[in-house]
Image 1 (cartoon, rainbow, N blue to C red):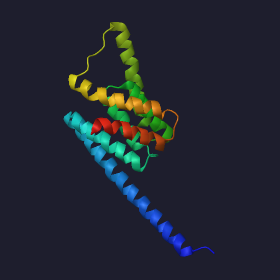
Image 2: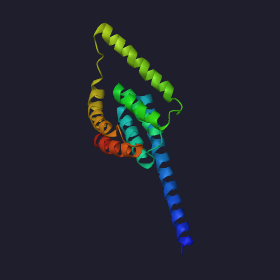
Image 3: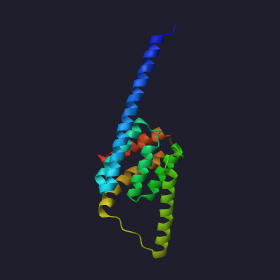
Image 4: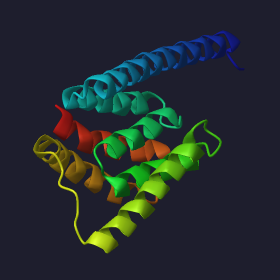
Length: 172
């Protein structure tokens, strides 16, 4: 015979756990957005690292939501890493192709890439990157690239796990 009270109790526990995860996601995601916006306003790369950390942590609670991946694409855009920007835009699109702003951001990235290729082929000169960005982005991109290679043919939850393990080495 089935114990309906035990079933009700288990269901309540699941709901409590899901609510805690939602709260944790919301809190971490909102902190990431705050750090990201402050970074853009103050041109402070330390805040960008904090934002990336919060987005990665939020993915560990809800890996199927597009928002943290979308912001990580923006972070790579700020760092001038087109290939990784595009990669995380693709992840965002695979999760929610109708996410507000996604298509517009993709167009901006695409148009910039086309313009840069045109400019590079015409002048043969590449822009120099700020020395601080090189130091920051070298380790970050190295770790993200490792994670990216692992993420090509896996689910968002597995992507989040691999990404989290690699990016935290840099952020901490």
